[in-house]
Amino acid sequence: MSIAVAFLDRDDPRFDQLAPLFRKYYESMGDKGLMLPLVENGEQLWLESLRKSLGRFYQLVAAIDGNTIVGFVFGYVRITQPYLGSLKVGFWDGLYLEAEYRKGSTVLRMIRLLEGWFKDQRVHSCELQVLVGNEHTWRLWEGLGYKSELYQMRRIFPNRAGNA
Image 1: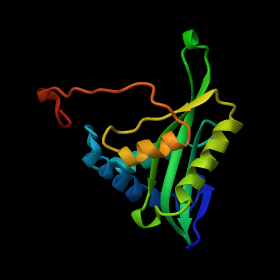
Image 2: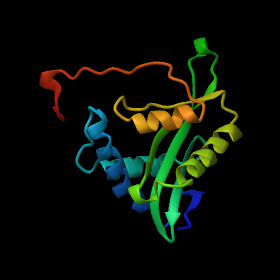
Image 3: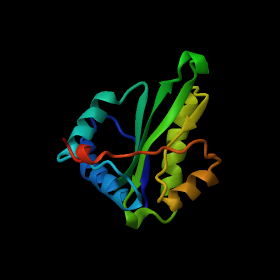
């Protein structure tokens, strides 16, 4: 199977194919410890936000089989606080690939393409978040030279659950 890996522009006619993939991506994190659920129609809200954000500081790489998007990785560049040197830092914001495409080099090709874009943006470093229960992804990123730096913790108050 020959999978293309390429940057996806907001005007690409396949762009709307990302929404159901984002829903699958988000739902797949539920059994790995994600505590914040995606709201109803959240994938469409994400897609519209992404459509507005793509450009100079935000980028998306798609894995494409024929004319069908089967995966994505996206990220952006942010600037640290002045007391941290106002450094440009790349942030990996999401990675998903349909299960039947996970064997082989597609994920690495997607990562390398976006990582090249981060380097072109002259970032100081890149950061990402991995769910505690997602051991496979922990190993992937550690194998690529990323090191654990902090733990994010969350407490949901009983009267704040859901959309209340």
